[in-house]
Every structure is written in structure tokens, then in C-alpha cells.
Amino acid sequence: MKTFLLLTASVLTFTLQGQIGPEITSWKINTTAATGYGGILSNVQQVQYNVSDVYVSATCIPSYSIGPWPTNPNTPSNQNFVYKITRSPQQNLGTLVTTPLGHIGVWSNGVSAFNAKDGMSYLNLGVWNRNAEYYESVSFDNCLGHPAPNGEYHNHVNPKCVYNENDSLNHSPIIGYAFDGFPIYGAYAFTNTNGTGPIKRMKSSFTATTIATRISGPAVSVTYPVGCFIEDYAYSAGLGDLDIHNGRFCVTPEYPAGIYAYFITIDGALNPVYPFVIGPQYYGIVQAGNTGPGSGHNIPPGGVTTYAPATAGIQEGKVEISTMLFPNPASEYISLFISAVNQNNFEVSICDLTDKILMIQNYIQPTIEYTFDVSGLEQGIYFMRIKNDKVDATKKLVIQ
Image (cartoon, rainbow, N blue to C red):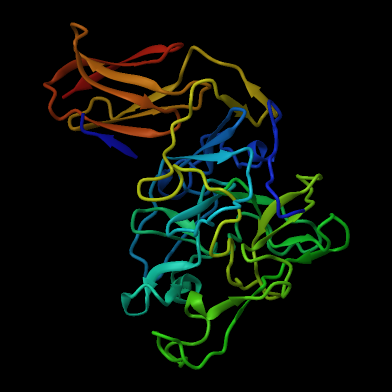
């Protein structure tokens, strides 16, 4: 909630123009206002796109049941994310980007994907980084997720409730996208990269070392067993099906011409296998706006199209909008939610009966809940005006 106080290792480029591809159609869009944990709208609220990018609006709350989280005191909350996914992903031929703490991608239901680290290291020296699966799995729920301190529900490992992890007879679906724009698939794929051969479980090319001494770290022991630190794992090309990024260039059902794709890694007993989702570094070029502090709140540009999954087509532009203003009457704070619509970048102002503007905020987006501090307004009747170049709507507001 936003609060205002007033097949090759060469470059991969996809020219999509107006085509609607998997990067648009693979999302689990909530078309019925269904809610999940805490009564929060679940899954993805809206998918918008233009020639270059897809904008995915989501609360970070799934439709399936989550929790409890033993030993984890955090509570999931609405993150109001707007992620930006490039439609023309490219291999990074320069300095590779390390997957950061926090979200590194987004599942198809709008929930965040995290990397293999738990954010802590041995003696806090930043050298031997702790494996989240080893140290935090006790706090994972049945869907192998848990909330971060900021309320961001996420998975470090296989998001088993997003797809059927037991279906080893069919190619896994796209279950998300990394922030370099390449798809993330479940655990199963064609044996051969050209799309032939039986379906098999994709195997990681990382293995845990058996070193007895860790330089600048603790010796292997019952307290610090092999695999409890990320640096315990070493990559060996060709050991498994996947490269150092935990992906490969291959033919998939959604990309018959081939695509670089990441795959979830699990063992035969369905236990998570390092690096779980994406390796230590992204394969592709990572766009700005999705990673780092305060990220995941991109502003769609003008001219984007809203994808309408019910008709598998395009939702035409509208001049009417549906909004929720609550609580109303209000005394301290009032929240505004604009339902999904093929419009963006609204200007919202609060005016008195003389039409004097008392409060104004630009770049308000649909499907995101915004909260305004109205504690400084006297009791009475006011109006909230919501407009852009095609929309001009007014809502009555009572302050008591």
C-alpha cells in the first residue's frame, strides 16, 4: 500500500511488434476479485504491455492457502507491485549481474521469487553466505514460501503450489519470469534441447563440495555441515542439464523456435536442489526498476494495452472507471483503489466545495491501493477528482 502524506551463446533478441506472446499470456490474472490471505486480492490484478515491455500488477498474495510459518513472526501484506518485464530479453555479454537479496523474479501468480541466500553470513563477514533452504526451511509453509520482514511473501525454492511438481510426464509450464526477461519453468522438460526425447527432470550442474576446511570460514561439522553455505557449492559444466545460471537454450512448448529458460531444480524425492531457481548470476541483461530498495513499483508509460484473458484479446480503451474509496466517511486516512482499466497515470486531487485543490498526487495507477492522510482536513464534504487525458471522474468524500 502506498501512503502519501500529502541455442547459442550469442545475443537473443525477439522482435514482437504487436504479437501477444507467453510473456503476456502466462500470468494468472484475477478476473473475479477473489481474495487470498488476509482478504487481500490474490494473484495478478492486471497485465499491460507495449512493443517493448510487459507491466504486471500484483499484490504478492497467491490464491492458494498459505501459512503458518513456524519461528517466523512476519505477516504477508499487499505489496502493490508493478513489475516490468522486457519482451526482448538478451544475453548479457558484459559484466554479469549477481542475483540480489529480495525479489529476483516473479512467479506467474504475482508472488516474488528470491535467490538462495537468507541474507546472513558466517560472523556477518559476507564471505560464507547462509543457504536459505538449510536455515529457513523450518519456517516454510506447505507451499514452501514465507513472508519477509516487509510482508513480502516469497519462495526461495520450488514454488510447489504454482504448478504440479508431480507431473513428470509433461513439460512443465512457465511458472514465472526472471527480471532479465527470460522465462522460468517448472522442473521437467524435453531431454534434448531441440525439443525431442522423453520428458525428464532437469538436473543442476552444481554439487556440494566436501572440503574439511573453509578458508575464512568454519570447518565442516555437525553445526556447519556441507551445503549450509552457498559457497559450499561448485559448478561443473556438463554435470547436469543446466548451465551455471540454472538454465539452458532450448525448445519449449511456448517457444517452438527456442528460448533461453531457467528451470526449477529438485531431486527425485521432490526436495529442492541448489541453486533452486536461478544461479548466482543472471544470464541476461537486467532492467532497472525491479531490483534494489523500493523496487517493483514501475510506472507504465502512456499507450500501453491491457490484456484481457477472458477473450484472449485486447481490452479497448475506456473513459469510465470503477473505483473504491474507503472508509467513507473518514477521519484520518482514506484509501483509493482504481479497478483494472486500459488507462494509467491518473492525477488525483482532493478539493473543497469551492473547487479549491487541497491535496494532489500524480502518477496514480490502477489496481494499486493508495492511502491519503486526511487528518488535517476539517469536518465536512469534499470531492476527490481522478483524471488523465481520457478520464475525469469525481467521488464524494465525507470527513468526520
